[in-house]
Image (tube, rainbow, N blue to C red):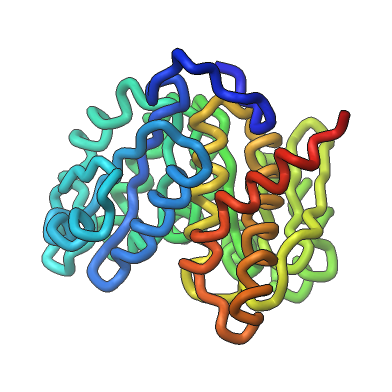
Length: 287
């Protein structure tokens, strides 16, 4: 499966030709993060999305997401994913093309342990976001045990915890810090913020120029996670998925801001503009 956002789809294809993504996300009060990531993945072209959530969220998410396959998983008393979910998640990973782990998972102690136990088992490309990254604070070296391509999507504070650096230093040296992490841990880094930096261990740096301050809103990062994960599941190489994902996310935000303004922009506005952003990009393809 070769990813090409510009290539017209053949008439005789089916959903299986466009990737199957597994999203592990959500906790009590954070079902929205799981929904935003999953729907963003579908809107970005993924053929199939399966979402694993704490079992008590199942009914809520089923009503919200018509096209996503929902898998309820064992949960803690705080309605977050339990360590007992590990076996079921490992089973769900089979026959998937990529995984997205982290949006809205919470920092429940059992959930943290679940993430730490799960990551070494990953054998498919994965995007680690939000609470998956928070779970790695103080254990970042564990990421070296993953035998598959990994993309991480930290904001500066999450990067601070992962790299044991101050936010101030990171913001002054965004390219250098992103590349340091990419090389040291052999991962693709998406350091979010104004002019998001994408760094790849093959000495590649990309600075994204799309986007606007209105995108500094709850759920925006969940949408980004879904877009990047979708491209990864469709066969894009990690640097390509991260670079194009950041561009599409920002372009969708720019289109949304033209309607709502920056002050009133919310994540679902960005989500709703993904199709228009992709169409615009396809029309701009170089000759």
